[in-house]
Image 1 (cartoon, rainbow, N blue to C red):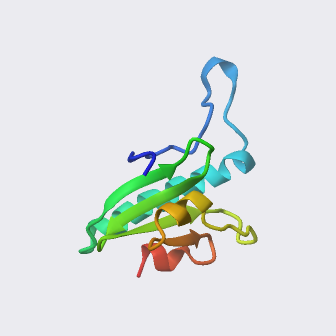
Image 2: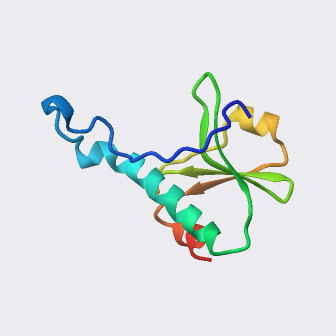
Image 3: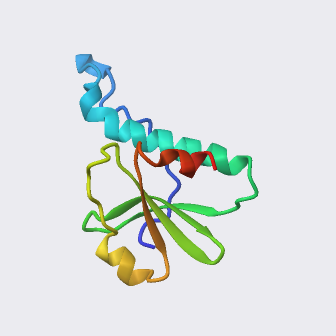
Length: 117
């Protein structure tokens, strides 16, 4: 792993300091979705016997995975996207570095099984 960090972003970039105002909802919706999914997954795991190390994975050339869970001696990568139409594939460095790892896209069409089942 290049980055080994546990991060919880608020999803609201910029804030309202110095009269800048809040970002428009349209620009922030992706970050808000990532934050919502991350927090809901933490809550899900807190109430189930799923013990995992949690990471954010990124490379110097800006390839990233929003959430990586390490359990069962395997890495499970999750990418959170607000748009259900967006086609996303696993970063090449992730696939090459961790060939046995999983990679799952989580969006509004499939998130319930990620945080409820």
